[in-house]
Length: 278
View (cartoon, rainbow, N blue to C red):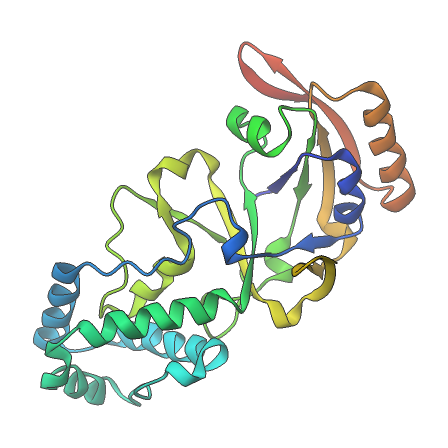
């Protein structure tokens, strides 16, 4: 996997990342208000239902259907209205039941399931890009902050039988989100689809159950959720070009003390693009 980067605005916070301590953010605290909002487009739902009734479930459909069942069993078991059929023949027989002609129950179930899942998972949001000017401005305090480079996170987060959790995956950007339908793989859109307005971020993310994180009360009802990865995954710190000399030296000292193998370099602007020395 290519290197992935995490922007931070406060240089002192790099001490956590240098130690391999990653923050997982609960869904309601993300900066995109559309996260995990269950989109249901009636025409798309009807089209997917008719496709499955006409063609039947295939082997690939069943892989995604089982993953969906595994995810719901883990995060929202009370929402499993109907068990996953054991075979594609049984699944096809089930979708042809007249019960599925009325999709209003799907919307209610989807909304309740999405809300329950949102309370139980956190996201680690990363990017393929260290050179995005908008991200330096928005996430790194107008280049007074920094970005941290990670390698081999795919070795740490190898995925599981849900096809969604515990895996570093790229986000898909869509002009229009068709949302969740009867297509078994459409459930992934809840976690890995965003509007194309955000495409400049080239985001990767890891979805992790908050129950697997270390949780610390920080203020009021706010909690900090963290998960540790090997310090060797942290390979480089790129300092913002606006960072003050004192802050830059503080970061270098932290790296030397906490994770000496990490390389600390400085970003600069060249012909309107972000570049690094070293």
